[in-house]
Amino acid sequence: MLLMIYVSFILASCQQNTPAERIGTYMGTVITEKVYGKNAQKAADEVMEKIAELEAMMTIKDADKQSEIDKLNDMAGVGEVKLSRDSISVLGKAIEYAELSEGAFDVTIGPLANAWGIFTDNPRVPSKDEIDNLKSLVNYRDISINNADSSAYLARKGQIVDLGGIAKGYAGDVAVEILKAKGVKSALINLGGNVVALGSKPDGNPWSIGIQNPRAPTGEYIGIVKVRDKAVVSSGDYERFFEKDGVRYHHILDPRTGYPADSGLIATTIVADSSTDADALSTSVFVLGLEKGMQLVERLDGVDAIFITEDKKVYITEGLKESFTFKDESKEFTYVEER
Amino acid sequence: MLKKGDIALVILLVVAVIAGLAGIRFYRGGMKGDRIAVIKQENKVIREINLDEVQEAERLSLTGDYNNIILIEKGRIRFEESDCPDLVCVHTGWLDKTGSFAACLPNKSLIMIKGEGEEVDGATY
Image 1 (spheres, helix red, strand yellow):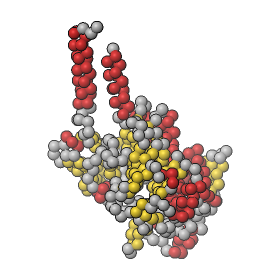
Image 2: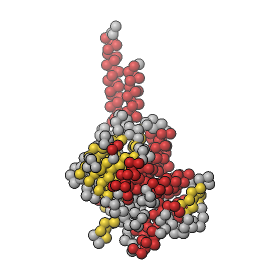
Image 3: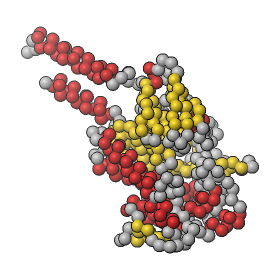
């Protein structure tokens, strides 16, 4: 009798410790999930379905379909557009981060992003005149949101909202909500490099998250951060770039100059409770640079960061001292412990 | 007081349990620690392969907006050829570790080896 109880206990816990895994291509990238617990498979499936929905709402310029953000952009300078609560939430957060970063993060970057074409097959270096003209269309203050009505309006013709710097982050938070609602206590989701860790691993240990070496192939790290219930998001000049005449142009545009950010950083990582915050902040501090980036992060509760400079130095905020282990096999980076 | 018959029964039960657990493992296919690769196209599973049980190399063709050729060998798998614009998939090279994956985003195809990562649970990139 006791043996049978013991056996069923073992079988049940074997199930609990085998995760439901899912992988898919959404939001222009690869999304992977590892979910533990009784309802793991259902929860994992529901998360992917929701991510597919978010993709349909927020992706712009997909030849096959028009998203609601495409509609918002088409109606720029014309009229307001009804949006889902998800899109309204993301726009609200986007404006918050634009204010916090004093414009270093600005989702109205669309016209400039188009001109550079970095996410297309034909990236190019726009002329200075083109950049100056398009810069005038970049201004997050031109987004107005009507919460009661669930609608938004872009003030000027030609303005384009591009949620690329925050949508995956938002998807991560939504995923966690869905998993928690299904009773999941342990999961790891990776949305194109945005990591979201729910709870601890089934054995109670924190999740070990590798921090990509910005100058080595994918899968080589400069360190590992151990986390529970955190989002870990990186931005870097190595993620998406093209080269022309020996100069590298990366994808993180500085809205204030119209050119790829030249702040002295090659990579940033944010560790925060919210995946949306981590996503928007990792772009923000990349554009702001080490000094201003550090200042911003230190003002925020529950947010920590790793900064990697172009002279290959690694700086971290106080809060990561316990959970970050510097581990650079390339031996090209220096960990700066005291600033 | 434990009788001889009781002890025999306990031993029998323990053996039955062990046999049962072993049976479950084998029934699931392969041994624990085998590398199972999953190939997906447009988010639908095309094939799952136990890489550790592969005998002969095999090529698999995926056609979508572009064409990929996937090469499957014992213990490893990769995108071998592709006519996509950036060839990131091919440049990723061989996958042989659990938790690793490669994707051809233009063709919406991907390969992943299921299971825990060896050094880390996940990584930012």
